[in-house]
Length: 77
Image (tube, rainbow, N blue to C red; front, top):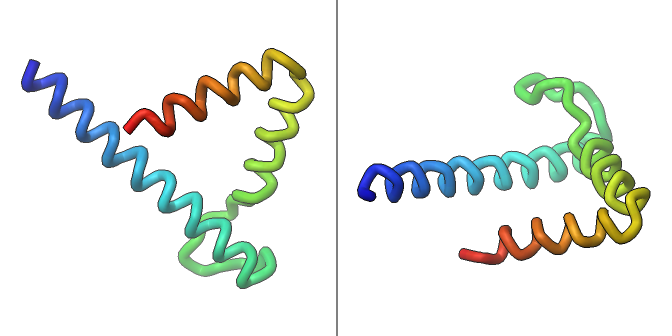
């Protein structure tokens, strides 16, 4: 059981780091207006997020249920 708790804490820490990187990517893209940032890979974070939200909206009720499940998992801390 101790191993599962360690894996869970590692996964939580990785998820938090990922969310922080997404936030950093959004801020950098807004500040630098999509210009080439030397230390940031050529990834368009805002377009990816908008595409994901567009996919959820295209799916109608199924997308809404999936979004609700993700929201519930996200806020389950």
